[in-house]
Amino acid sequence: MIIGIPKEIMPGERRVSAIPDTVRKMVAEGLTVLVEEGAGKNSYYEDEAYLAAGAKLIADPEEIYRRADVILKVKEPQFNQQKNLHEIEMMRAGQYLITFIHPAAPVNHQMVLQMAKKGVIGLTLDGVPRISRAQSMDALSSMSTCAGYKGMLMGINNIPKFV
Image (cartoon, rainbow, N blue to C red; front, side, top):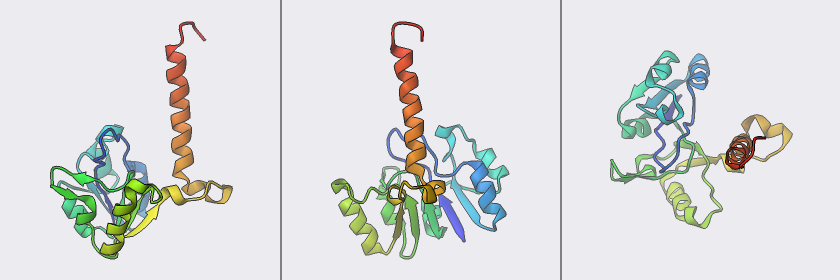
């Protein structure tokens, strides 16, 4: 099985869908992992770390979408201005997309319909229940925790007295 990790292209998105340690575990399980060059840069993971973890670096995102059985992303598919293509246009029937799709958001209804028409199988991380049994897969809780801590630190940094 081939896992594809394209660079996130949503403006302001700094996360990456898999860090080198995760890639190392996938490779150890026998998976092939394709990582777009620079995918981890905004999260402070260099391409060399992905290579050391056993990933294959790919310069062209279209190649990742063409070859991968499963695409891992942080955010829903976006329009790729460099390619002049929407990421969904690069996907193929039977391919899995694991990401935050936000299918209930009206702004994403058309995107979900396009995925369905193409035969792309979307697994949305925001649909994982926030319960104990599913906690190991619950990306939303971990991201909310990080945002909460950061918000607290930003608030403390802006108060006029020492805490």
